[in-house]
Image 1 (tube, rainbow, N blue to C red):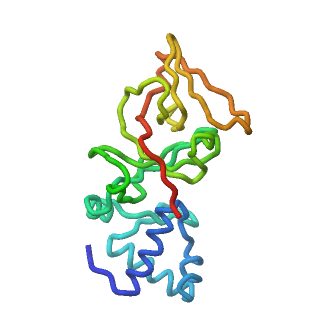
Image 2 (cartoon, rainbow, N blue to C red):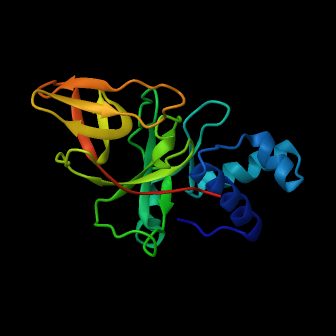
Image 3 (spheres, helix red, strand yellow):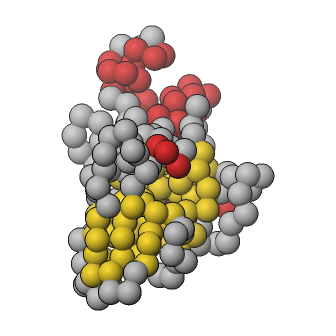
Length: 204
């Protein structure tokens, strides 16, 4: 990857932070943040694409970190952020890495630990708020009563998991909102456990 100029690096760090906060910036927002004309902002973003730091997935806010950059910074950056997970109605967790966050001083983790973003308020009574990130230790087994991430028809959600004789209960934690517990047959092909939630943190 080609090195960046000082101005390109400043623009890239701004875009990278916005992407890690799950707030992809538009070209206009980049221009406004740095006091640039939109054409100048476009040229800077285009340089970042050509040098391999960003890719464009299309749309008004389609900027993403490139796989080349993510692979290069994996060891230095820490745990991968691989998408979002819903607390409430499930939202598809896209299997593309958005970035990396170094949590070595906060959480113990193995090589396959990853981070998912929470969208929704069904787990607020457990201290898991909308916009929080959960640290996930992947694996198909989880003890009854633990909080985990599960997939329902390829959509991810975080709940407290109660394993019963012939079914699994996905228990929310928001008494005020009145979310209902969902019950899934244990042999359902549309359901599987992604992993156990080992931590939660908030991006400031």
